[in-house]
Image 1 (cartoon, rainbow, N blue to C red):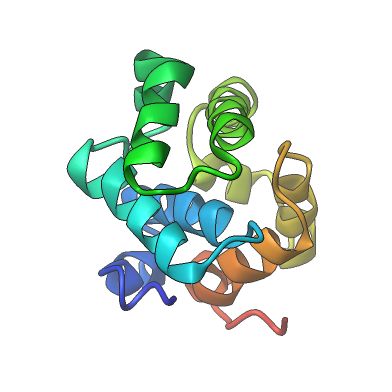
Image 2 (image 1 turned 90 degrees about the vertical axis):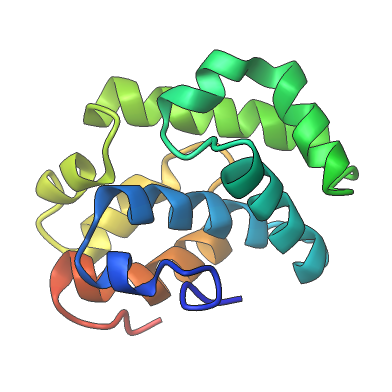
Length: 147
């Protein structure tokens, strides 16, 4: 799955905050060991159907509602842990980076530092970082990620 397929490419190329957060959610879902079609459906349910497209919104709806959304998308194997980690991701982004990936970028002098900071979020491992940076590096740092 690519940012182009989700309609996020132009926004990522401009480092648009809304596109960056949506792509982070997509990368988070696609980075898990689950079928790509299920991860895509989960993204579309959470972001497009329920409009959980800013860090504050998942925190307002809560774990129970996120689990429901994931279940609706048949993302059931990891629904509880994924909902909990999405909430922690949103909370950390708000608490540590003023709720924006743009702030995370401003505090990261290099792509490598940005990737390291991103990996500090619970539930974001090397695969999620790789997926995110593959599409977002150009807008964030003016070059495509080498990974």
